[in-house]
Amino acid sequence: MLKKSWRSLLVAGLIAIPAVAIPAQSAKTQTDDLVFKLVNNTSKTIVDFRVDPSSQQNWGENILSEPVPPRETIPVIIADDRTDCTYDMYTKWSDDTDKVELNVNMCELGTWEYKE
Image (cartoon, rainbow, N blue to C red):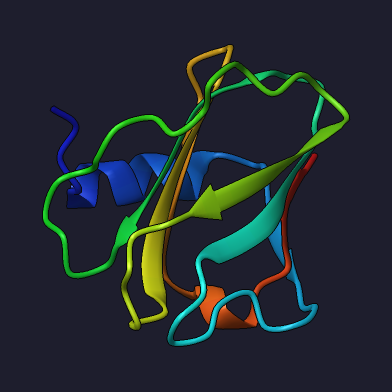
């Protein structure tokens, strides 16, 4: 199982692929599922994407049913019945680079975009 660690943060800090959160309507309310668009504006395929509560120690399962090709956008729905908005995200591309984003307020998120 993948473990959230400082090593992952260090590796993520070395990756030159910035993520940009683009605000939209509230992505989640106390009774709604977490809904947002994942945008892959890179030249590499996203092969692994995990979104887990920041309070969780280990990463959960890859939530992608299939890889996200370059320049593609997919909808993401997290139905976890949580009212807390703070999540961590792990993303891995086809060239084995990865990125970790910690303590993201998902209630203020409508789109999560990776760019080169």
